[in-house]
Length: 342
Image 1 (cartoon, helix red, strand yellow):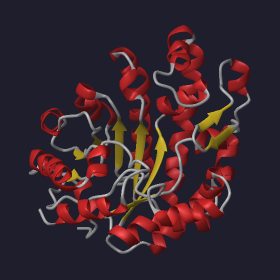
Image 2 (cartoon, helix red, strand yellow):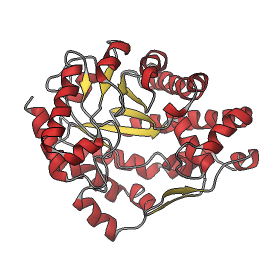
Image 3 (cartoon, helix red, strand yellow):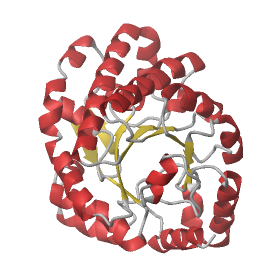
């Protein structure tokens, strides 16, 4: 049996206290990251530099002793690698030249991805050698629907009307985009595993904005195809799925996709999720990132409630979404210390 707590949980074991890592644990809230940011190039350049990406990934491991390190990268590296114009602007976020017609879709080049992402794979290899023995290395991609949202919309949005409009009004075109992303996501995650990732995670941040039929078509079906192929290529390598805002569909997602673990968002009742998700599937989550900003008694109460609801089944402690930039590092340290004292 592995001595890595995260892998023990993903193999179906109830580990107490639950191991912990946090989404976006490497990044803007850490002063050591801001020092690198202020003296380096743009965000994509940092992701594509094995020296910088390795250092940034390791920062929260050194500071907090997390049970897992997640690769410092972004879900939009894949569209960038496909040839879409992707830029990150401070105060705005990602800005993309949108894919709105067949000609724009045809201009994407899946054959570019392997070469374009080679620096990311080098980073993974370096991390695997540098991490403490008990720390698990997690690779990741955005899930096809969420990545398509940014590619079609041209950036972030409250409700992604262009994307959802294409799914309803031009389903053949949208299906082509989803199929391309499903294939390239599978290959990219597989390459991350070959490079040294011990677990991979699919982030479907905008899964919950779809109707039930479209949730099945654009969230569940692509995830199931990705998981099935990864299982065939890499037996025993766990996959975590994060269908954010899926609510009552968490159980259905777990059953039909084949993921080893479902990450719960902030608004999900962990006790109800535990009742709807098969016992063989681990759960991850789901502290409110705002509670982490608050810290203190309010945060500790929320932590106790979550671990109490999920005690007795495989559970990885995490947030319900990523760490926010205004989070104080001392509160992250407090979270880890309190959790490990439970």
